[in-house]
Amino acid sequence: MRTVRFPAASKEYDVIIGTGAVSVLGTEVKKLCPGAVKALIVSETNVAPLYLEKVREEIGKAGIETVDYVFEAGERSKGIEAVAAMWNRMAEAGFTRTDIVVGLGGGVTTDMAGFAAATFLRGINVIQVPTSLLAMVDASIGGKTGIDIAMGKNQVGAFWQPSVVIEDISFLKTLPDEVFTEGMGEVIKHAFIVDPVLLEKLERANGNIRDDEELLEDIVAMNVADKAGVVREDENDNGRRQILNYGHTIGHVIERDSGYTKPHGICVAKGMGIMIDACVRAGTLAASDAERMKDLLKLYKLPVSDDITPEAAVKGAMNDKKKRGGTISVILVNRIGEAEIKKMTPEDFMRFLSK
Ligand code: GLY
Image 1 (cartoon, helix red, strand yellow):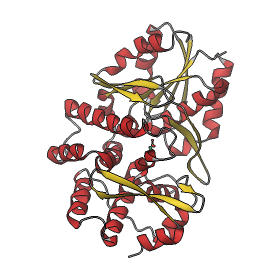
Image 2 (cartoon, helix red, strand yellow):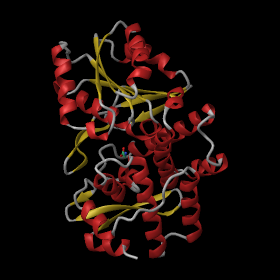
Image 3 (cartoon, helix red, strand yellow):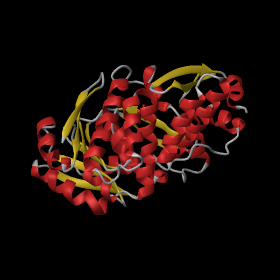
Image 4 (spheres, helix red, strand yellow):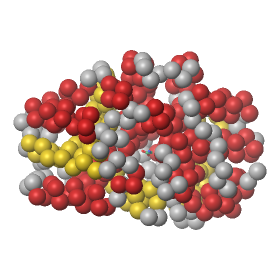
């Protein structure tokens, strides 16, 4: 078990990673939220049958009474109705400002639990207990919380950092293969944008990391440290943090156009593949690096292309949060381990994507 410190400007906190890490949940809650007497545990229909009882028990050890809110698993639940139900559950149970929310699940859960905590009584503490690889390496850390609306993903939300994040690696055992694979999209993204050492480690592992808990702990910890290094410089996403959106500009459009039936990490991988090809065509990324990057995605069973047209990609991107004024902040990787933010007009972006 190990701890990575996450130094966001508004709040510094620990991310505790390891097999059996959930056993420190009660102690951490007692230490960090001494005034808490009630906790709302937010989870979903796939995760709750597996881990809700354990988490209830751990929080109970801290002398805290729990209530639950379990929603139907899936991105389609990520809306204002679910968050309003969480607010009502807390209000009915008489929650006060010292009480807490615990997010137990994947990215949809931790985003919504964080947003409910950020907004209830103008902000109460949230503890994140991610159960998917994607949530461990990305969604549950860094304080982005929110919901989707008809016009797009994560369009409403708040920056709200957790008090602690507990990442129990043994929870990954029950993850369906395809859900583990989509998490690898975000892992490989970190390797491409900031961490060539991680990239080499993933190449050496040759696609076989699922069954090695020690290696998994190592990889998750490297990812948390990578993200911490970026977020410490720019918590509110006005500058460097935008590099974490590599592959997302087009990925989000593919995801939204599928009615959220295509998994996020898969769409990000497709978005990265499209950006890799575009950088090679623009002459800024060496063909050998591009091949290495695409080979790594394929090694971890991720796609590297999509049939989205440049027109659809540009139109969709203009509705995204990554748009500022009339330009889109496009994230490029022209050397492995280095990302840059390039502002493009829709016309520039269209030219860049056109074959
Ligand atoms: N998932 C991207 C970020 O946290 O900024």
